[in-house]
Image (cartoon, rainbow, N blue to C red; front, side, top):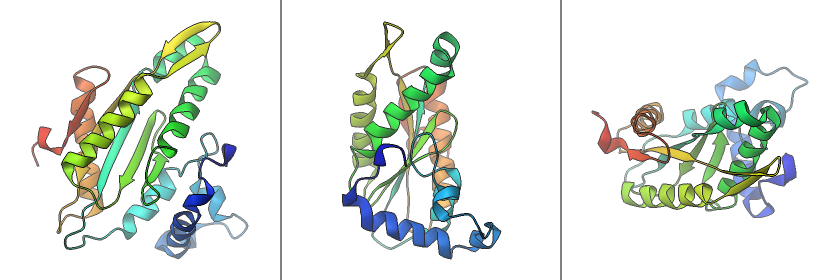
Amino acid sequence: MRNKIYSERRRRLHTFFKNVIKNSFVSDLLHKNQSVETVSIDPLTGLYNQFGINSYLKELHPQAGIDYAIVLLSVDNFKEIQHNFGLKSADQALITVASMLSNRIRDTDLVGRYGDNEFILILSDINLDNANNVAKRLTAQIQQKELRINAKSVMLQASCGISVSKENTFSDKVLQYADQALFVAKSHGFNQIRDQSSIST
């Protein structure tokens, strides 16, 4: 993984996550010569990729009294950076955001790359208000980050969609609500945050 974004203090969670992927029903699809690391890690950022996150989400089950949040975060000006400065600079923006996210979450939380310019956070044992606070803190820090590209300063922009589980809600539905909330956020411009209360569920 690039620069060992997952620190040693997350070793136990990382090991647990790898075991989830190994033991999931998709493991039969893996080529015998491929490692779990190869198929579950995004080579650019060192974070879990969409395959790895989806494998984990399939193992998440509703638990009485224990809620988790899914936060989808979009780097709003990724395509603008790519267009104006090239793919390498856009990739550097993603690497920067990946590092900031992974270094600013709890040991019990997970972060992954979930699309070209999107990241996903799975926050354990948290309610909607606190999930909103986490998203606000992270996006504020990202928006204050200045990238130096070709002697020019570029400020990053990020929006979030947030959803929190309920006792009888499965992870695919929680993810769907977060995705819909992100769509609402992006439809209002850059640097926006919306949660499941902004959509019709």
